[in-house]
Length: 398
Image 1 (cartoon, rainbow, N blue to C red):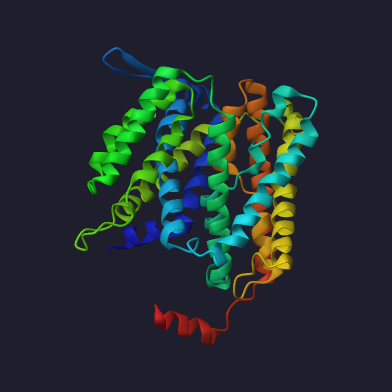
Image 2: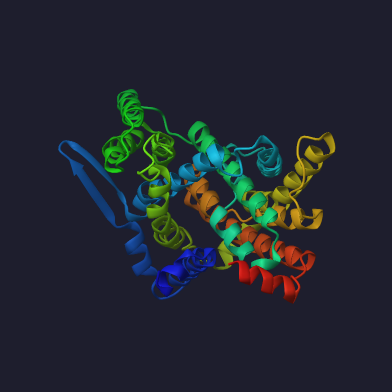
């Protein structure tokens, strides 16, 4: 493996690319390049299949099209972890699962408290409930070997359960008015994926055609089209009888994961971070939507996760990972307040008013920045660097 391939395997790379994409999008929207950025953002793209036409702005093709790959990877990771990973054991899965529930409920309640009397704003209740697994884990990895393995597993598992919750929320609460015929086509496509799975077919190409049909059908049916990725992932087999054939799930995850983290997510960040920051937008940080998101992500996440973990440990439903302290759990809880990718995605579904979308996006950026800086600081202070001898021993094992 060459040095470039080794570099791309580091988790930090994905985080750096996303931060760079955010900076470029913000910079372009607030510079003389703003007209060019808007032109790229709003360029209409048409796709025709006979009489069927799918058309939308380029930004929506990223949000509703390319993000299918992101959701596919999320689905593959969830399935693999549940079947044979750290989440396969109830003992290890209980604490992050309970923490994820607390980390979704508290932000939602806080946001609702700020926006209870505004029906339009209240639709954004799910925005602060999401954790960005790419940024959170990437930032945690910046501390290197100082971070206990148990804490990395806890945060990753927490984010995976959080993703499960986010997918369910999007499917139930943020679909449009359903169209029956496309929904029936989507059901047939899902049935096709199940048949391919039950036949033991391992070639990824066999899942592409019913997957594409499913995506278009969900788009036309008024269901969030990106959820097609999760449904496709559920059909891709993890284990097969033949030992001489690699796991289709792991093979697909290995091939698509770099595209998701290094291309799709940065493109999503670029197209969704282009917020014009001026006196008017800064003033929006004091409206109820922005305050609800900031308080929900930065305060609600840490409060909900910490209380849920404490309750689970006290009643015996969960236990802290080996070598992990409560201070480090608190730092991870704060870090879970980074909600960039999924929060932005929910914001684009929740609001049709551009003013509300702008308020939400700016608040997500502010809250994620606060959570990232403070969370890393807490973990850094609470985690001592390993002794030189231990580092040497660790290096000799690798």
